[in-house]
Length: 194
Image (cartoon, rainbow, N blue to C red; front, side, top):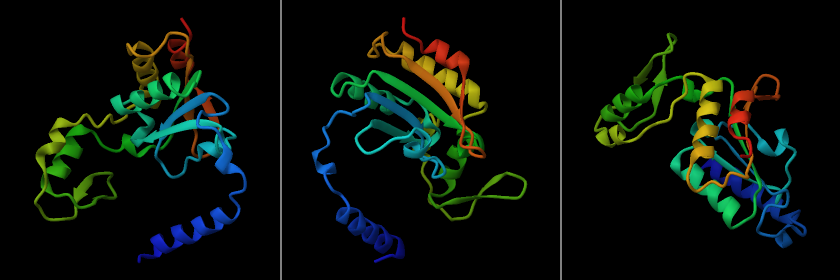
């Protein structure tokens, strides 16, 4: 077994020992809201949003983007599990700002191994092929401007035909240097109840 696997299983054993009555938590989130945010390891929604187990749905993906799958999750969260408010939270210093679709397609086209970033901020492939050209069919939802991407995602959610008009969708950027949530006012306005 790997060191990481051993650490995770040991941590789980400790968690189980202190699990208490968490097995009795209801399926719907107790605080009736959902957060769509980035998978970045520096973000801990439980801490920055004051969550405990059972409080909210947290949907995470690269960039916290409103992909089809993220919207699918939000719709299920509302329709079947009763969430009534949604947050889109991107963050400063996001890795999704470091490349674009063309770069990703080129890297995956040459090999499937992990790429590296040089001192000039340019990506290069460290492995040998074969790669895959399947990447050309994917919109990687990269980010050029955080405020603009939050606005785009909130607007995409608000305008989706399966999203009811009475769910407020708030737009924020998490500052990785301070931990502060910074409202993107235009996004929150775009996501307001209609």
